[in-house]
Length: 455
Image (cartoon, rainbow, N blue to C red; front, side, top):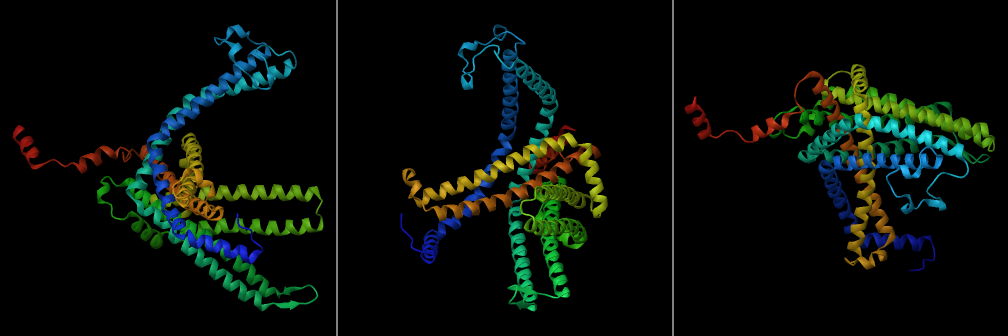
């Protein structure tokens, strides 16, 4: 390893390293996107077997734990279990047989685990149909993304708009900060009340602007997904993302502004709370009550923001499907989710699990492949790949995977609401695959003549 004498030499060395591997770093973005598409495509076929393996494995684990605790508590004799306990090695030198001490604790653990096993066994019969439904929704969402790859381009526009917003905010904030006067005594800038209010208002504008960009993105993706779902003949679709963006910018900007304003207000309250807690901690650094209040307040406000984000996202989906305003859309979304609470719970757990695993798999897989390329394809020398370049590739891949998975999650949630509304209204849009096969294979002229002669 090369010894670096100072910060300047370290910086120059890292810049040279990035410049040497710049094309591999750029290729990492494409590799991450391909891995994301491959991952979602595989889930389309493997999500159900993976989900069933996890559910059954958890059932077997609970059953085995209950049996062991029953034996240790003396509820059942070891010879009553159809397993040869002499071949079972338990951790910590524990023997197979009734516990010699702590019988009461073993009995309590046996009752608790047994109740959990019983409840899980009952729930499993109700969960399996909903797991099948959740996997079906995930499969439809994956099909939507593969047939409409333009969805994956939209986050680029959101990033660009967010960068412009931050640049504008920094430029204006520097201008406002320059209005103040430097104090030699406190070695800080002093501003008058008007300038302070302007800076606070400008900060709130940053929060609102960022939330507004995200809200517009959700509305565009939801509108394009709903159009794809409701169209019988998918061949007739021409760039649903563009039509979704056109409807959003023409009809739903007020909805985006209203929903994002609510989120911005909660975020602003969180920042104000953090500021005052910071001041209290400076005055009382060892006060446990201040630390407790800070933790509780931050937790409550974070939960409130997540809840409102959840309501807003589903309200945007209803707005895109039914073209209603924000408040009726939020009400319709909440009522729909309440009527399908078990379905949405199962879908959320499965989707969030697959999304979390996917982000890390894509990031690590991209970094591994790029490190292998840098090492010249020699797996034995992969550890010699430059750490900084590989770390940059991993971070870039994680950002791309996060953007992809955010779009996929929005598509999943939209498909789910469309699916539930389709079942409730009886529009039979979910069974469109048969109609799609018929549309893609129209009868030939000879077939029509044969049918006509037969009649």
